Image (tube, rainbow, N blue to C red):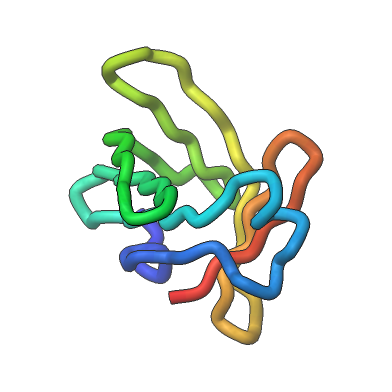
Length: 95
């Protein structure tokens, strides 16, 4: 478990490319291995409940309702932002 990840991270509003791809999203990492991925559209929220584990600099997620593990490279930047690299796209999140 990476204690630095435990928090709610919102997609950085300055990350225009990722905003266009993903929209208004946040990721909540809980210390019990639960991950809540929230998508906001207008004034509605869709929550996707997942599990996660950390192996080195890899974030491994799985959605129990539709099992399939995904690997995403991550790092915490010196400015405190979370950077994810998934499917050729780098996105940044803030607390």
